Length: 302
Image (cartoon, rainbow, N blue to C red; front, top):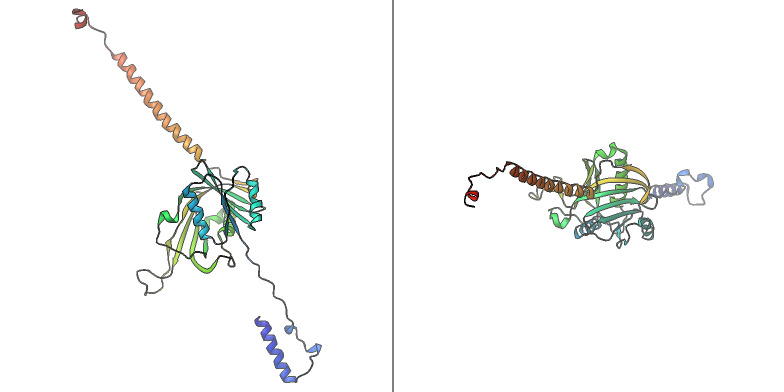
């Protein structure tokens, strides 16, 4: 807009200098031509948020916290079948969403999260652990509902190929577009993703520009945790949406069912060892038992 105004002012100055009249073709400068500026590419990221049947109250509260943090999220009803994940890209397309966060509950205690770019992929399957919701933590931090957050990724994401891919997918899902319908033009919190022990740790912090103990003092930026917090363990990365060729597989991942089975076997081993010790004690007592003497009371007064 500014170049157009400058050209109009220059043209008016020329008319004043030459006098009023029709403008000849040779008097037209190249700067006077109204050149259309290329349109700025709009960030149209929308996320579909839904879960499977069988989620607990803690899982449901975690989904509500994520919905409150991300104003570009569209929440949908639960998916009835856990085996028909190929329906999710169609559901996302019907809701005009190009990202999907699907929470899959198993045995009412295990929670898995699918972070997917629909309809073409890729998709990341992660195991969610150590879930603590906002209501449970009761932190002192707070942020405006609908505000945009800054995404902070650990430098370890750039050291591995799966980390780079995960960072890109999380940027599309957790990064709020500036022109989102429910987004507010404020940036007052930070979403941090850190890698430790091959796990992704999620934290949410409020940006404090002043010390609450000294409100009239000099500005001092600090971070105060808001919540929620959880830990993600990557399991597999698929090429397509909710399926396809396996791009990455975590060799260190052990399923929660296997861990519980090992604990039960350990308890069974303790019981078996205790029973074997009791049998050995009884055999040792029988072996050490002395024969009855000839002058025993039972034989003399028989």
